[in-house]
Image (cartoon, rainbow, N blue to C red; front, side, top):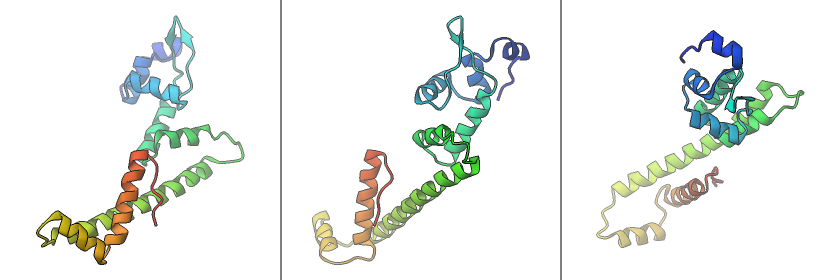
Length: 166
């Protein structure tokens, strides 16, 4: 992160360009996060955004959550929870538990795909149709479950939601 001049920070807050430079993001990203409610809209001076220096801490928190795999909607949920009875740790734990469950489902889907791919790589069928017919007639280790999991995972991915796997 590039340092900003103390004069700019003290006099009028951070311009969007300075905030972006300091945090390693683009002004477009900061505007997007503002629209999503991840960053509070800053006051304007002369028609320009002037962020308080504390915006860098807020952006660092967003970066940490993104690195942990949270989507922007989940981060908004984390940041919007202003219940004074809930500690930061409680808020993180609630989101982390859900995210771990999603990761476990994704890991199961990957394992099922791996099993199915291993089977398919050993295929000796003369045609794809024959292969599909064989797979549908008999139980290939992991194939039934694999196919269901893969199809659900692909469908959930299309809808951008975590799969509800068996």
